[in-house]
Length: 119
Image 1 (cartoon, rainbow, N blue to C red):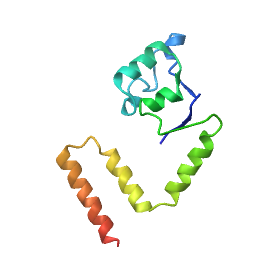
Image 2 (image 1 turned 60 degrees about the vertical axis):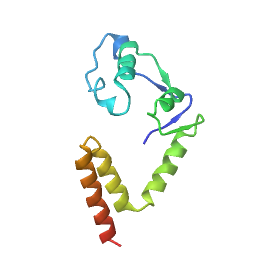
Image 3 (image 1 turned 45 degrees about the vertical axis):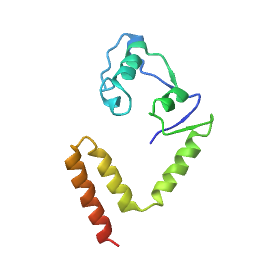
């Protein structure tokens, strides 16, 4: 989950200083951003606003300047006080989102059965 202020700046500055990304930046964020956008960020090094990152679906919550930490803590409290076993299962399901449809449905069915067994 990512909370950002509208005026936040995100950038990949390697190209600006004559370096090639060396920390998996060129591939790792592709889970969150399209290859085209990631290529743009890497090649230009130009800052991208929180507004644009939210529009691209990378930022979950967009808030006014100075409110990001408060919103992030509020979200964390909501998750921390929620049904922990369900939250763990949802996270596991998301980690396997690249499964085939059949494998994903099987995994989801198993998690449903585990949840029902606890009630």
